[in-house]
Image (tube, rainbow, N blue to C red; front, top):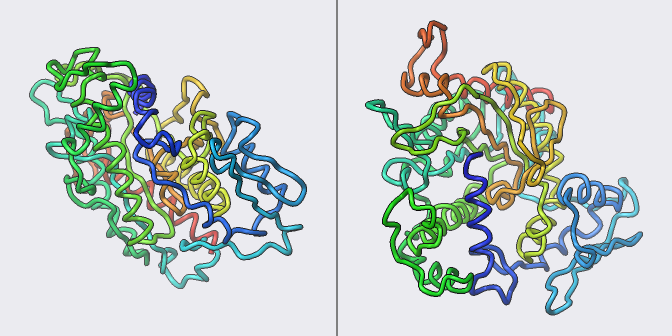
Length: 421
């Protein structure tokens, strides 16, 4: 969500130093297994690698020692302290490339479909963003206007997922849920991260960190143990656990990440409603220099690059974005700066951005950010709830916002796989 960008930047600066700093890992990161990349030897040409690296994944540049590209090989830094490198051999040309090892299947490999089942055999994992119920306030994905129903993103996305699943199944897809309740996927809880949060704060110049957030409006709350332990729980532990589920149990051909967007709303008990409403989708890419300095993020980026997820992810996201724009009538969101994103594709709605989910899920990801929850239009439609057919919302006949979301997604997925197969 846009209004949390400044807070996220602050949090990342706090969390960049952890007990695993000697291994140069990101937040709750795992030590990379560089030997896995041996399976990608000679699966990509030099020109393909440099294009993906420079134009998609590392658009903000990188330090000179990370990638040493020669005619036949690239030497990739594994660990700066140890000065250890992984050597990847390029294929001499496209015709002699080795087969790419991956568990997900590109659309063209699914074979022709029959009748009205363009998604037949496709394995789709639905990932309703965030958490609902009692967890929504902790995540700050909650607001309430007077006596209205609370708006909680995690509950909205779960409603969309439960409506979307039968639609995709009717078109032949095998559909799985990454999350199908308001409860977290991770077994961890904020109290499990109290000691780590304290150590992080002390290492970052807070010698006596306070335990609790006494006032949610307190501008110094980011420096409390409670606040940091909660972030470690819901942002990092939760998404990493979802990635384990996706990569080791579900093995989908595509993950659809469902979100609603928002502008800054101020006090969640007395929020600001805006006239702004928009849509965009995200694919993995546009890594920052600081992100690529972490050994695990650099490894995860290279593995994703070599898997060629982007080759499927971008045209799929462009097609879905076009269908959703037609269905919703929403204009494309324009990021206020290009510090974290790179606009790509042909639809005008798709950006590359390095997020934990679209980096860790080892398959193409369609990451949807439609509707501004605290826009006057979206808020009125959310309050109307789900319903069949149309109703007058502000004197305009409208579908349920949830079914409109589902229709746009379904049309986009159908359009893409019908053409690709």
